Length: 546
Image (cartoon, rainbow, N blue to C red; front, side, top):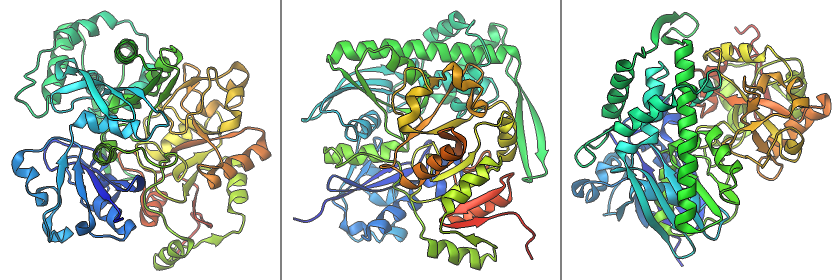
């Protein structure tokens, strides 16, 4: 029987973000990649998934003519649906025949991305983001037969837009939700009633605007100002190190308390929605998706409430994951095997060595690169770690990571400076999965860094670099099956120190996407405060180069 290939896409040239592509062969994921990694523009705003689609096809060694269908993770106009070249440029993809193009409702794409990659036979699905077509939150029920829509909430009730609006008001940007979550731990949730009042009064024209985010943010900002709040002032600074202009918010107590209040509001709303999903479905399994599901603190609060027995979130629950979801919604099949995040580009030692020679970069090759790297970490060195297939989703999960020693209380400041980040931002660790229970309260495995845990008292002084101000952290749990090289590195560090974790943050400089290629890794290494770069079996330092 002929293989069935489906190419899933997200992203277009107008009002989109997180462009990405995914290729499914029968019920197997062949490749997934995000456009931002190739074009080096964070979030790939208003971009088509051109490079990511080419990567997926090339990895499978097929052409677009071999596809059974192209699935798009949002509804298209009839004109665009009838002409595939409006999605992928004809001159780049040799469109020599009419390909079946199927547009999938955005929230259904999110739902499919999480259910068909879960181990559940049936589940309630909760999708929460900024905006689908005309909805911001949707509840589904899924089983072996299909995914059934049950209920949705309008964009006037968008939790994603509310959170991003307050992020923007606090000077962290409309896409600064992760920063706002980190900032919330520094404040107190004293403005809950005000936020609820503003949220309850939002009224948008859901039927006529393709994207309501600007209108929503403007309304929230105007109401906050009317109630006496002032937006964070922005200081402009020229960074001589990077040659870029930086915008730095001046964060006052009121902004920290506003962040804490927004976080508390989101947590309570997600609990209410989880209870509603359980009542509508009667399921004991919950799948979470949509951009709001990146809020690891709220995810853990929902899980710890024990409304459901089991919860699953896939690595790219934001819009890049809707490329995966669109393909799965068309195939309507569970993927074979357990999902991992490592479906992106990878490089052999030979190809890395060739690039190092071409760029005249000095290096040392080691048979025991894991032992060498672990020893460097114990000496408080910051290391760029480049191995295996590139992750998809916003979290670095051990293949395109910056690593450090969690025992150093000064490492937060050192590492934030090295990456050009705000000095107050927290870091999470990668932890041996089997040791998590002795370190964290209410522990369950968290392989995709999408849950938050309180650290047990006896461990707080041992790992200060990953302890947030509220004594919590956002770990990635690692086992040998999913990522053997990374597991062995953490294990070696544990053997040397008695601490079964290392600090893990994304391999990028502030404002840039994670590195994709060895070229990206080398450029970022030499333009940041990292001490060493490890790619494959090769170690690069910052010695004197001719």
